[in-house]
Length: 221
Ligand code: HEM
Image (cartoon, rainbow, N blue to C red):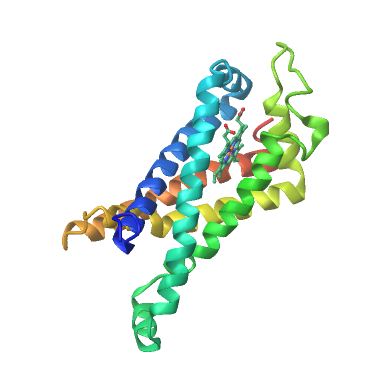
């Protein structure tokens, strides 16, 4: 059995892909925060002035996501099949709702991502506000309008909110869990890592939710 095929190898692959996906999310949250200053179109224009980098990062993200999802689903199924009933009850007492629902929040994030890509990349949801077809006053693709029209729509806003709550819940357990997989689980340091991971998850999810809430409340746009 190769290293990657072993349970430890697959957990390490999940932790590493999860950490890199998290890095993308931090960069994405920082980029999105330009919306508060009304600079989203400037940011998007800069991003797309490096088409090769955009395409490479898309392919890397897709590969990371495929690895993370495949190992997440297969490890969950194997663990469920292997656990005797008594052990499952004992483990339940030590676990949190977030840790027990990782598979479901993960699948909810996957569903949100398909919707999000149909909205902002393929631009087939709210096509009347597609950034590729509409220009702002400076002649740039109007990404700002695409986001505003989408997130003011009740159904689209609900999908985004559910996706971002699922993300926050997934990371509430996932951040510390990936750190633990890499062996940083000392008796004194680990409880602090768990708290830091939860705070980080909450802040990241809130940074996305803040945009959605700001648009719905009329602070943005
Ligand atoms: C209010 C919240 C969000 C807003 C306003 C937003 C906005 C955007 C925009 C405008 C793009 C297109 C960038 C471009 O190519 O010009 C984008 C791409 C993307 N977003 Fe978001 N996003 C949000 C939340 C999220 C969340 C929570 C995730 C992950 C769980 C996510 C994952 C992605 C991914 C993977 C891409 C594709 C990158 C690409 O195609 O190059 N986004 N987002």
